[in-house]
Length: 82
Image 1 (cartoon, rainbow, N blue to C red):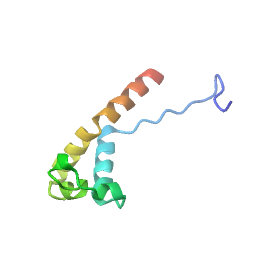
Image 2: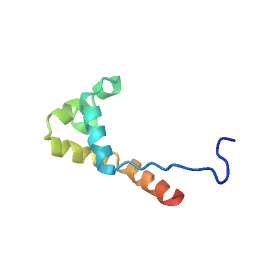
Image 3: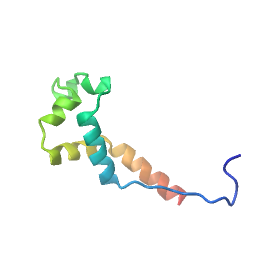
């Protein structure tokens, strides 16, 4: 009932590059246990270890590729609801 026909609707879209940078920084410095789990796909490194061996630009690019599906889904939802 909170969404009424004709009611004002605010649609917020976050810049995709900002999302990549933010996710990179969070994953590089975060404290969640899964960030410290060894990953075979990263050469038996944790995500944090992997990011610490990359330059910032390489890390942000990797994060953008890692979250590409989420970025595309956000774009589709925006286009369908604007």
